[in-house]
Amino acid sequence: MAAPLEDYAMIGDGQSAALVGRNGSIDWLCWPRFDSDACLAALVGGEDNGHWLLAPQDAEARAQRRYRDDTLILDSEFVTGSGTVRVTDFMPERKGAPALVRIVTGLRGFAAMRMRLRLRFGYGLVPPWLEAEERQAVGRVGPDLTILRAGAPLDRDGRDVGAEFVVRAGECCAFVLQFGSAQERPPAALDPQRALADTEQYWRGWIGGFDKPTDWPDAVRRSLITLKAMISHTTGGIVAAPTTSLPEVSGAGMNWDYRYCWLRDAAFAVSALLNANYHAEAEAWRDWILRAIAGSPEHIQVMYRVDGGRDLNEWAVPWLSGYRWSVPVRVGNAAAHQRQIDVFGELVDVMELAAQAGIERNAHWGALEQDIVQHVAGVWGLAGHGLWESRGEPRRHVYSQVMAWVVLDRFLKRNAGAPDADPHLLKRLAALRAEIHREVCQEGFDGGLDSFVEYYGSRQVGAALLLMPVVGFLPIDDSRVAATIARIERELMDDGLVYRTAESREGAQGAFLACSCWLADCRKMQGRDAAARAAFERLLAVRNDVGLLSEEYDIRRRRLTGNFPQALSHLALVNTGIGLCGPVLQRGA
Picture 1: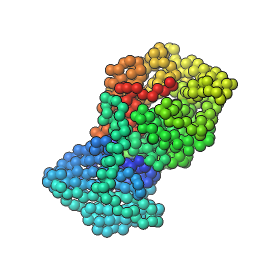
Picture 2: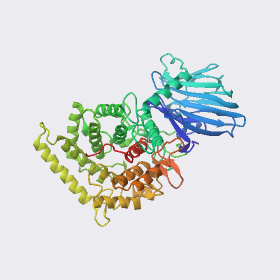
Picture 3: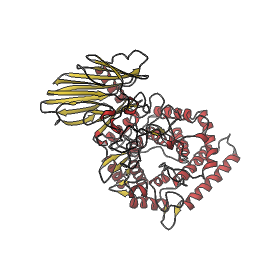
Picture 4: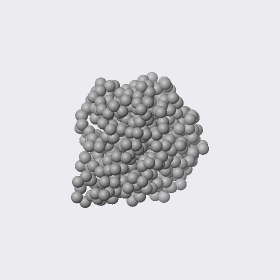
């Protein structure tokens, strides 16, 4: 059975990622891309579905681990009865074939080690055809090829390979797994020590560009590195998480595939990158989204594949038993075709933030924005599935209506006084902006409850409403905003963390981690600095030992839940960690 999520760390190369357990087992890897089929899938099944173990033979060995400072290189130290060893795991920056490197270094005494590589392609189903030599094993299945080059003699065990060896103080033993094409020659051998030095230099060089003041520099830098690892270095797309089907609620079927690029999450991520002064990544995302949407905002999807592809057909993998027996394991995501009107507002808003940061608006975006504005003007009043992607009845979600207002507001502000602006169009859109604002304040606010509500006709509050003052729909000192924040604090908080809806709090779902950052942002805007910092530091306290966050946190069981690591949680951490200590880009300015 897979370990608790807290026991995993992520390594990656900006095109794919792997999860490494505290026990030395890599239980999740998709190659060659984030959204490719998994070839190690024990995380959502069992050991028979693929894993790569490298650990001491001593069952009583104690493990401690950490990322090397300012890198995505993981060092795990194992203390045994006879000595101490370090296992260093990383994925080199991809300049050719994808690779995963594991280096065992003796630190004290000696340790007997074991290695077992069990590859299973097609999400844990198909073993490769293996050809094994003393220190090399080549596997082929369909179009794919893997090659393992080992620093110790290999033993073939049926369809797997393994090794048992001893490492003494001062000795190193490396294992390098590479991916290639079965129709071509295996990729050339990689020097593990040179790759380690290059990888260390790459990550430290990148994060060295961060110089914003914050009282939590280690946490913010770790989250930035985590986000960078989830940005495709070839396409610029940002995946929501590198995993699928890690349940929000165990056994409730709330298991979704997050290995895709959500427009909303990506827009939020760009705001975090811009606030941290990482403009190149923001520009790459802009180019990705322009390719993905092309010229048809009426056919916009909620999410896309990493390369901008539109096919996310959802299906359940019948041979996988699920993370800790929680099924189904899903591939693809049917929510891609939901109506979520807020997405348009997030796109237009983040492009305005990019313009504030000095990123040039090109002709493609200008034309596309015009089409988005016209499209939203026609559909803003339709029911949809909202920010939380409910698969139930479509509703008029207040946050979605607010973000439709954002589309018009940003467009009108930017074009006010422009010599080539169509005055009749601006007048019509200004009237519509006022109409949307008036309707939201009338239909979305319950006077008896003295707060805005989750959707028209609801009597429940929702955490997405915390974003209303952030995007400038109403000022932070508006009495209705203040009352809504206070109600969220009363009804959606537990143990200092925020649930996204009343339904999620009453059920078995965890607190939604990004929402705690949104609350901290609102408290800061209200001048409640101590309360803002308390909310943020409560979020920091639920990170695992290497600084990673999932989507949610089960307060009762004190466990991270949902897909892991989660971009939305980390980007919210970055924005709030910077915003509580200094100026950030102002939405709606």
